[in-house]
Image 1 (cartoon, one colour):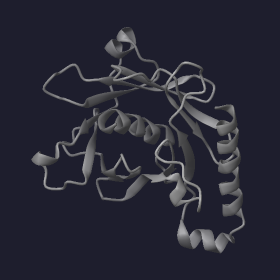
Image 2 (cartoon, one colour):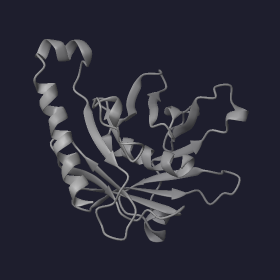
Image 3 (cartoon, one colour):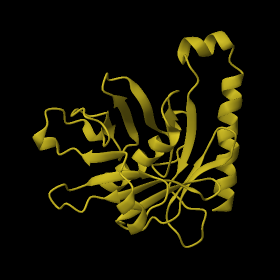
Length: 216
């Protein structure tokens, strides 16, 4: 596990170095504002724990999940130091299957009973919708608007998903790692999360966790 972790750190840095070899004019033509590229490893660095480890383009661990077993009722996304930044809890309403509430900070009965969720994420049942590519909808809890804030479409099992806002602008994308690093296949356990400027990378990673719960 340690050898794989060190390899992924080195690989993440090599991607950044390759980007810096491009001329600034080339970058502006292909990407516009800078985005955040994260390597997601479906593995916890804590022994005997299942989870996720997320590495940035500098080779640093920026997000972790260490409490990931089976179909948990709660998930906690931590930063690299282990501080909780987002908490996700399954909705208790049985009529709302595969619907998750997203909270800021810690999780637990006391915290979630005194805090209002900031988003809720609902799995899309394709037989009820016209677009079979839609995986889930994300709604703001503190908004009077009835429409969705973000829509996720694609295939999580193939690690090919796009998160789009209400204007259909792509704000984050999940890609297979071997689609970017030629000649190296990582399967579905290691993949890329690319987050556009202006969208919270932590929230993008929280959506990855929920897709993993809904479609794994």
